[in-house]
Amino acid sequence: MNIEMKVVPITSINFGERFRKDYGDLDQLILSFKEEGIIQPLAVQDIGEGKYQLLAGGRRFTAATKAGIAELPVRIYPQDIGELQQRSIELMENVLRKDLDWVEVARLRSKVHELQVEIYGEKISTSPNAPGHGLRDTANLFNISAGQVSEDLKLAKALELFPQLASAKNKTDAHKKLSQIQEGLIREELASRLAAKVASTPMDRIHTALCQRYIVGDFLDTVKKIPDRSIDFCEVDPPYSIDLQAIKENYKDNFQSGDYNEVPSADYLHFMHKVIKECHRVMIENSWMVLWFAPQPWLEDMYQLLTGAGFETTRLNGIWYKGATGQCMQPDKYMASCYENFFYARKGNPSIIRQGRSNVFHYKPVSPSTKTHPTERPIEMIQDIIQTFCWEGARILVPFAGSGNTLLAAENLGMSAIGCDLTQAYKDSFIIKVHDKIPPNYCSYKQEG
Image 1 (cartoon, rainbow, N blue to C red):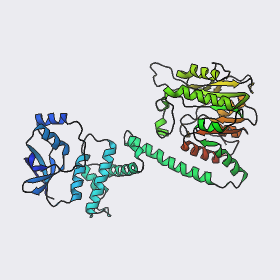
Image 2: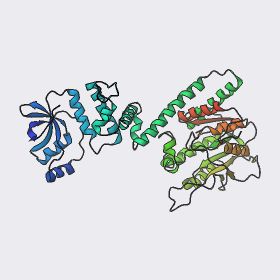
Image 3: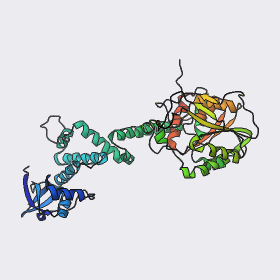
Image 4: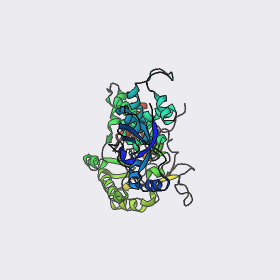
């Protein structure tokens, strides 16, 4: 293909319809053209009689027009190039822009590759001189590696299937998100198969019944179906109305964005008032509730909500001590926190089952590599808490089931628990954990032997 370089009058160029519609702020470019002229030529097609069709360079053409520039440097393509080649040239020009984000780059490179294959056919042979167009040919067009082209094609395809990937900061983050989505799809399929499995043995029936006690839905809707004074113990682990993604290390690496349902701080106290009130309603006389909370800023508020609903409690909370290594977002101002708090509140006048036990529960956190929920607590610790306040055969309510570990802990102890959560993905993970072991062997820590 013969490509001629020359300077032509701007009035001889037909702007036409462009792939790119928004050219952004042109002021800086106009000023540059006035001071230094136009260095990078535009791409045009010769359409005869000294006229040209603009193929690429719409932003420069628009800025030059506003700057009052009379002549432009151009690369002139011959009249016989086809529509697909014209389209490819425009897309190529767009890919070379410096203001593109990774999503635009991946999509444009993919479109260029598809157009080249449509023009020349798909290259079958690996020989450099073989007919057709392949990954290496596209790589040569952009002066990048074939591996980069392959990555862009995969991401462009993934963006069609999963548009939420576009929120990723960069390609590395996009690959992590894609991996999470793919793992989620596999988990969903496996959970679906396990849930559909016919309960043909006694253990199958135990697994099926346990899975059915994890309800996907809003607790405040579900609890309306629970009779007054029918629950022996509540373990309430609500959202804390804090920036979980900022506080939890590796949150974005391990969990899909949007999985965790937070409550806005402006609505939090009203929300928790309704939760605590409903728990008090369904609990029998002389029973206990455990309420996890963020002491900063909610300690006094939670205390007032509990006592206002009719519970008796103390500000000397229960403590989950995770070990000496803690987390802190502002280490220059605060010491690292290595524990979490919970109120243990009583309705009526029940007695603690394990009398004399300290208020500190020392258990290491669940390993990030095995977590299925960002605020997952170890089954072993939950069993310890349940046994501190519950008697054999107790009926347990878990308003925010999350990982489902409280349901598993209760099953280990021969107790009956029911839980709610808004996210189906967390129940899918729970179903897989249910079928992985049998009670009383559910655990969060790797068992020896």
